[in-house]
Length: 162
Image (cartoon, rainbow, N blue to C red; front, side, top):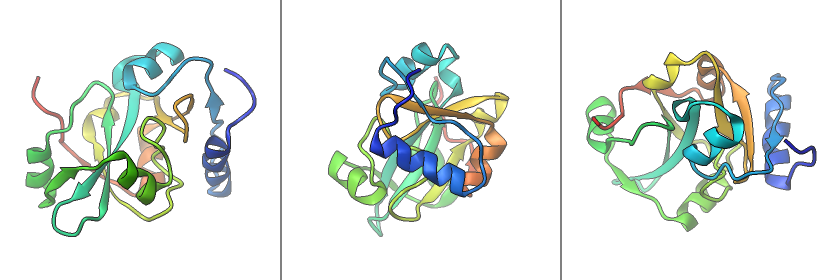
């Protein structure tokens, strides 16, 4: 883990500090762009990676943040059944416009707009999880409870059956 934070990672660190959290954003020497790369760089299970995925709500075209376990694929049908929201895929430009970060480094917090957020209940199985921190090389460690506090997200079952 290196010391100097990129501006996007620094923005996440500042948000965390301003909200009273002592989490440290770590700039990693290896890529953390995917859940698999992040788990390898950190030395944890893929399921402990809290991946932030941005979708577009079909009727309003608003951004919806889904924070899923790195081991899971989001089942849009389960999200619809739990929330009534129909999700569409969001492209890179939409993600950057609505959250202020590029795909591969989207953090669960510090977005340019307030987002409706849903949390994968499977993340609750781990006492420690890791989330992206604004760049494809930065992460921070937290607990599922802290993730819930920070995001104000609702826990739902959203994983596709394997």
